[in-house]
Every structure is written in structure tokens, then in C-alpha cells.
Image (cartoon, rainbow, N blue to C red; front, side, top):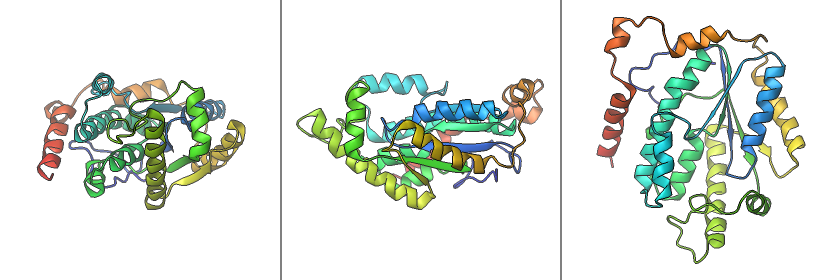
Length: 273
């Protein structure tokens, strides 16, 4: 991949040009089937002989657990939410995504910065501020947007466990019921995704159809994206070598920790508010 960032990389992070792996993003609102399709794609790619690493929101060790704890209280403010998710994303980018790409793996990520920006934008956050906040993101090789109508989404969400406080926009919509809040929030969110699709060049896939039909379309797009990769398992030692170097150089040892770098970066973002 080209190793381009949208704005500037995370402070202290240096990458090779180009990275041998591929970064493939699956985007779409909750209930659209991202997790299922990510699993199917991983199994298919691995059976083709390619090394695959998958990740998703709030899976990072630095902030993932704390985000879940903060959401349980239903009191997290919108700007705090943005910075929390940006911290988690930066942690996963440095500790998971970049090492896997350096090792030559196909990285499948269940949502990326676009979901985070869409959620924040419909909550009233400034779009330009959001683009700068997530400007340290690496540009993916392929962004697959699973587009669904609100009419198709509603029964899927109900069948999978019902409405969620945050995914219904209950923290800001102000509707009389969670159902009304869900409809209003998801309608606005889907419209925001449509805008992002044009701005960032999403490959749009009709997710109103059965799982197998959606998967066939995804396969076609992914096959093109990985066409120049050579099948064959990436050595586990190669991956570990990127994540946990055996010997640190003096420069690496003296480098500020990710947490410190993010603290300074996000502090500068808050000064712009």
C-alpha cells in the first residue's frame, strides 16, 4: 500500500514506503452485517493462502475497556467521546494495524475513522475539527461501505437484541421513545455516511440483500485489491518482530510513549475548540 496519511502521522511513528500489506475497511451502521462479512472474508482470504489480521473499534488495550465503562453510565459528552475513540484508534493503529501491514498481512478492520466521524457529526461536532482529529489515519487500500435502508435495518436490529442506548442516539436526540430516537438517529447517520462515501471514495455495496449475495460482491472487490499479493503465510516471527522488537535502539528507547504523544496531540486539538 502507499503508506499515505490523511494529514499527519501519529507523533513518533515512522513507516516504510510502501507497506507490503493491504488495509481493507468494512464500514456501515450497526446491524448491517459488518462482523459477519469480516469473518467470511477472513476465512476466504486465509483459505487462499494470505495472512489476515482483523481488528475493530474499542479493541485496543489503551482505551478500549475504558470506553465501554464510560458508556455504561450514559453520561459521556460528545467531545470526550471523540477523544476516547481517537485514543483507541491511535493505539490500534500503532500496535496492531501498522505491524500487521509491515509483516505483509491483509488487515480487515470492522469500521475505521469514518464511523467515528459520522457518529460525532450527527451529534453536532464540527466536521473540519473531526477531519483534523483523525488526520493521523492511514489511507486504506479499499473502503467497503455496506449500505442499508432504514426499512431493512430496523428488523435486523430488533432480531439481534433490540435497541442500544448509544446506537439509538438517546444521548442527544431527545425523542419520546427509543424507537423514535433510533429512527431519527439512524436516518441522520445513514445520510452522513452517504456524504462520507463521496468524500472518501467508498466502494458502495448494497447490503439490503441476503448475506451470500453481499459476500459475493465483497469478494470481487477484495480480490482486485489483493491481486498483487503473493499467497503464503506470513511468518509469525515476522509479525512478532514488528510488534515486539528483540532489541530496542536508543532512539526507540528514548521515544515518547504513545500515551504521552497522544496527550500532547489531543491537548492541541482542544486548544482549537
